[in-house]
Image 1 (cartoon, helix red, strand yellow):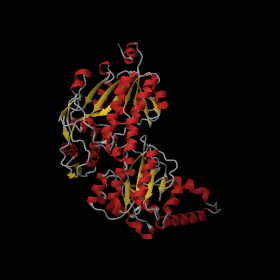
Image 2 (cartoon, helix red, strand yellow; image 1 turned 120 degrees about the horizontal axis):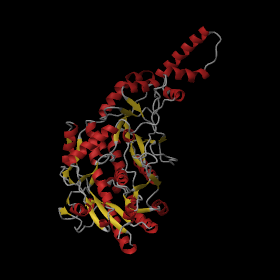
Image 3 (cartoon, helix red, strand yellow; image 1 turned 60 degrees about the horizontal axis):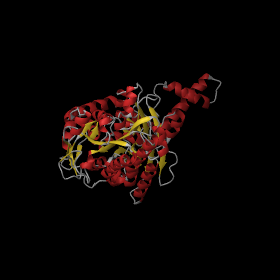
Image 4 (cartoon, one colour; image 1 turned 45 degrees about the vertical axis):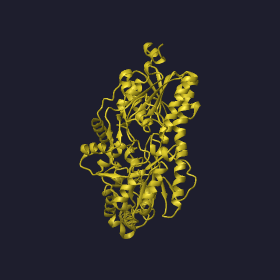
Length: 559
């Protein structure tokens, strides 16, 4: 008996396939493959896709635990590819309740909506992590699975069990696909391959957890997307397949590959992570036989392609919403803004003299006065960046904190499933920088107030602090909370630096109000015990809004 997809193909119509998580890393590539293979892809996600032009793909915005939204999105679809999930194991560990909701409960919701909408097949994206606790070193789909030792594995296995139960009880066919570790274009910067590439591009050491002997079966994302679409075939009904690469690559070999491709950077070893996937030799022979699928891209070639994509997209990603308007002639803009504010004098000579004196006085005040920047910003429309355009459910977090608590602060953020730019004007050492970045956060300079004299050393101050925190290339810095002069802003720009400041600025836990993705949140904490409460509260508020906390400067670079 043919599936609905086959019938539609043979009848000349394009079968519709709903892709949950279709705006994400893997899902966006699956949407591309579906379109090339003659399907009509439809995206269901919490956010719009930034990888597809508006109008080219049908979008439905919603949560996978919302049965009504799911059923409406599934109308007319012959199959669902369920990829929406909390995939970052660090986030899962920090938020087990949220992980159960996003991974297990959402899968049950997708299956129930598919049953009610008459969808014939649900393709479920699982993971080779389900083998991590098995005693065997070589595993395949027939390997008996052990009790999971990690929350991420437990939630993905729960989804597999739901698939089997819905097939038995309600006749909803499934295909379970256990993915290798995906990498390639559009990947999250926090993932292992992109993170190492980012460090290498900045000339920073590549950190390897433990001795780096943990093996991984990586799979290039475009190969993986082809395998996922192959899971729609009739032969795949109620079957399980591993979709992993053909090579076992250790974490140390990843670092060495990145170093070989991008230059001679140092490789340093850190403490091993608890609950890390120790690595298995995962066989994908069943997918080769039944789906005619094989991971075709060698690991080194895949990393090379990712680096090529990363460089090609560097110039256009993360464009600030509020750039300095440099194209308009500066003098014309000043004249147009100042003219309505100046009185009309009868004598041209007097007007020139008074105008020159006023201009000189204003410029002198701007150079020497504290807080002149805010006045000039209001007059001329120049201001620190407070938001970026992004389709990701992320906000940039900027935390003003003493250097002494930068490491425990970043560790607390990592446990809460977040990260931030930590702005400090204190002395920091290389060890502090490395530990903060290992925790997923970043350090940026906090400029000291200008005043009548201090602005003279702005360039040197920015350069010195940027060197301390390991920043290179274009520098983002936090301006002084008080005492930021126009001269400091201009001198900062000559040093290749841009100020960033929170659109929402917080000093203590209080209602956040409306927050939009791409906003910058600025939080001030001290070295006392209250900073932990503040961070817990902030991360909980963002989770409730389905937003992730990321470093503000990283949001600009990779929005």
